[in-house]
Length: 120
Image (tube, rainbow, N blue to C red; front, side):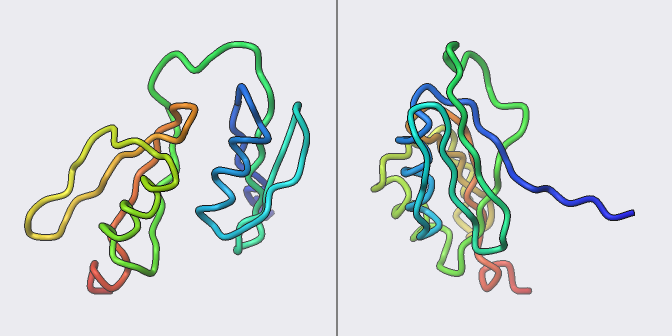
């Protein structure tokens, strides 16, 4: 038996806007309406956003960890320029560590070092 993750779902106050914001990170296009929106990742999975009435209240129990083919700090700068906010900076002077960012609705995610920076 094989199990896959078909999609990752986010609750959102504005699914269309949040899907479009995340789609920029992955150079993708979002599709949807005021109630639900989605975009596909290069790997084939879908990132889905659904409208919910309640606002985000606590820290995420599950979060995404992003790894780019560009250096981590370049990716952090690119994503913050798109509107992410820095939540916690765990980058260390020796080049290790990660950055915790939040999307426009406060969902936390991490930006990790690139494969080249990790040395494998």
